[in-house]
Length: 252
Image (cartoon, rainbow, N blue to C red; front, side):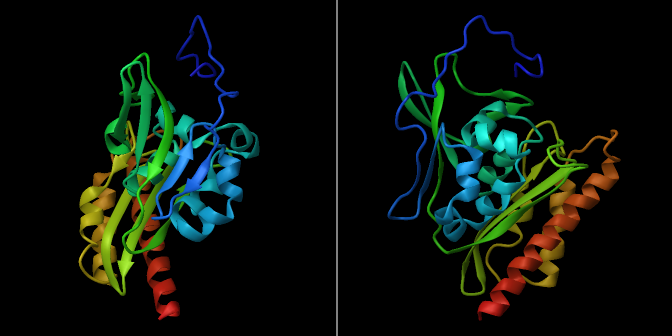
């Protein structure tokens, strides 16, 4: 916010020395907890994350550039509420929430309700987010994250997060969220719902991709036309779901 000249606060409070906020923990039931000071690089290098949550593992090395990944945090990215932010889409697709703490205690806020617009969230003036929480999967997790950028570290032209849970060949839960194609992260819930209750097929994959492209609200700018960005969303959804289907076939 300071870099973009969107905020000029009179006082800055450094929370880097508060103990316990840099934790990345996977609970016994599979719930993932990411503390407010856990850096992007910690997630990128985490062997635990790569073996438990493929959508997060796919997104971690694509966040911004190495300088940002070494200092920035997942929680900070969520709070920043940039429509081009990667983690908001990923956590939305995963059905995650944040835990905010303030003078009135703690409260849990679903990420799908946390962001109210570009660079805006629902935090009260006396609250901070202390952790982001990814619920434990009830099936076998699968998915990934793809984004188009003109060069490394540039704002995303378009991005797609897909998070699935499977029981055998049946999709028991699905989440699809979009980056950079609207004034805020877009939860493509209808596209995700089209996948639940059956196996991944060419027909369901194409239907989900169509619905995701329809959910996008891009604007034509120097990165491309609105039509081009919808095409990218459609292509990424198809690509990610085909990868999941192919992986399931190899494992069968």
